[in-house]
Length: 227
Image (cartoon, rainbow, N blue to C red; front, top):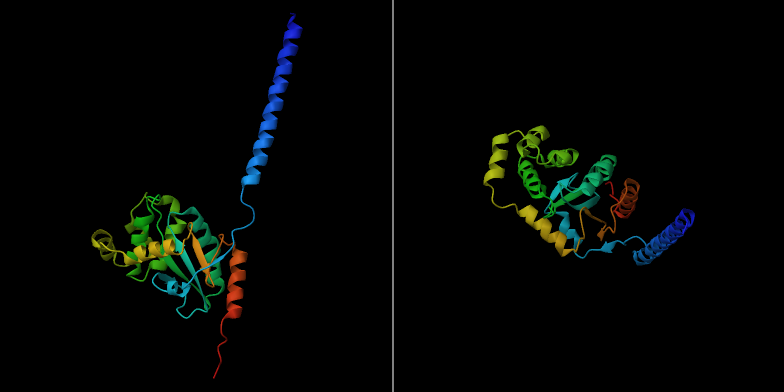
C-alpha cells in the first residue's frame, strides 16, 4: 500500500470520527435541552406572612406602606448583588414608603456567614445594624481577611469593647435562629429569598421588576385620609 493510500485511509477514518463526535454533541444538546425546565419559576403565596414583618432587623420607617421581607446570608454573592444593586436603590427611591425586614439565613456551607450574622446582631445593639449590613456586603470579598471589630469600627460602632464582648461572650442569637427556622418553614430554596405583598418571589428581581412590585403594592395600600 502506497503512502498516499495510507494517508487517504487515515483521513477517511478521521472524517468519520469527527462526524460521529459532532452527531453525539448535537444529540446530547437536544437531549439536555428537552430535560431542562422551561419558563420562569412562579411566585408563591405564603400563609401568615404578616408574622414575618417583625422579628428581624428593619431598615426603613416603621410605618412604611410596603415592607419587603428578605432572608439573606452575608457571604452569598447573589445577596450582595440584590442588596447593593436592587434593594438599596429602591429604599432610596421610596424613603418614606418602603422598608425591608431583614431575616438572617446563614447557609452552613458559607464559612463566614454565621460569624458575620452574629457581628451584625452585636452592631444592632448599638443601632448600627444597617451600616454594618451594607458594609459587609460592600466588602464581602474581604470576609475572613480582617476582624469583625475592624468592620464594626468602620461601620460606626462607637463602643468597640462592648461589641467585642458581645461577640465573645454572647451565647444565644435568637434572631439568627428565628430567621433560619422561618426560611425553612416557608420552604425557601436559597438566598436571597424575597417576599413582597405576601408572595415569595420565584426569582431574584431586577431593579425594574422590584420597583414595579413596589408600585403595585403602593397602589393597593390604604389611602391616608387627612382630617
